[in-house]
Amino acid sequence: MSARQCPNCMAFVPAGQIVAYSYDLVCPSCQHPLEIATVSVYLSAFAGLVAGALVWWLANAHYSKESGALSWVLPMLYSYLAFSVVAPPALVFTADLKLKPLDAVDVQYGTSTAPPSHHHQLFDTLP
Ligand SMILES: [Zn+2]
Image (tube, rainbow, N blue to C red; front, side):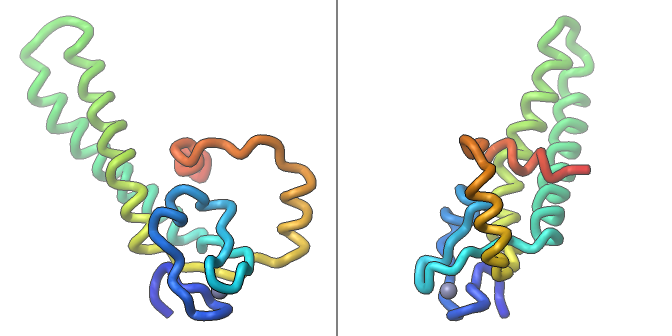
């Protein structure tokens, strides 16, 4: 089975849907609730962190000769941007979909309030 494929009907879930509704996925073909395998979420978060660390290191070396607040703010800003740019596509490429148990869906719908924005969900999965 390849990434982004529904285990129930073998249809492919659009990449945008995986990034936008990582924790609230429904198969566009058979309407079965889906979830992304934990390993895929961790892999994409890890790829984002590696990119962020790399960018921070490069930016820090670049700004180290300058004094002032921006010289340490900018590397952090760039590394955050790198994380935001790298992690979602990495999730799309690695997303291994599983069928979500229906009882878990009912519990989730009963207790959930406003869904958090997808940008912070990636951070929330980190240990
Ligand atoms: Zn399906």
